[in-house]
Length: 315
Image (cartoon, rainbow, N blue to C red; front, top):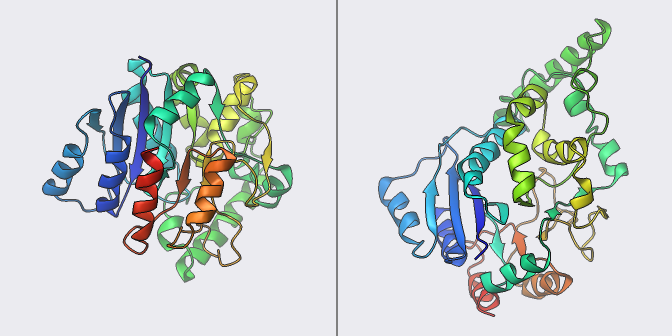
């Protein structure tokens, strides 16, 4: 039996997390959970999370403080991969505690059995990549990357952003060798953070973890950049399930097979749309397109979606 590893990053809504773990709980899976160290969680809640897994081996990995925009996001992913990779799983799925599957584990395993040794990423098109100045996230050092997220959207955050811009300008004036040139990176990839990768790719990332730290430790928002960049650098892009790039529209298949709504006009804070009661038809459409998971959910606010997901995952 070819087992899968689910790598879960969570920071709140632990009752929903328990529901997610119960849906992933299967003898064909092992589950690795990292809870943001900034989050308060009681021993009784941890016990409940553990007890929600009866068939899977459940591992609670080292906790780290995860800051929006900082290298700590990559560090969390590396901790999870390092904890899992020695078991040589067929696939490694990185999901958040706000994600939920749209199919049963039997169906999901059958799909990946038919598509072995692939990389599932949602690649972003060049227009969006240029608009978001993705190359600049790595080319110059961002010395405030771990603190900006704590103040994003307020006066202090704007001040930190100004200091970051000044720092980059100084690096340019002093003609500091840019990080990409120094580290031999010819192509910067851009994708959604969440992925499903095969064993070879997972081992490559773990083996290159020191190099990854040297490149990305002072980068900004590089959780969306480090994996596709490393895949192209190591000439593993031939394994991509699809190289179709996203245009943030509702009727396209997202390459990581996670249906994420970035197209709602109400989105203003850089976070995806949260699915609500009444979105069942749209989520069913997502499953018909081929998505195996969706994000993000808040079942406290939309409890009817729980029954919808339960029904989908029993098929």
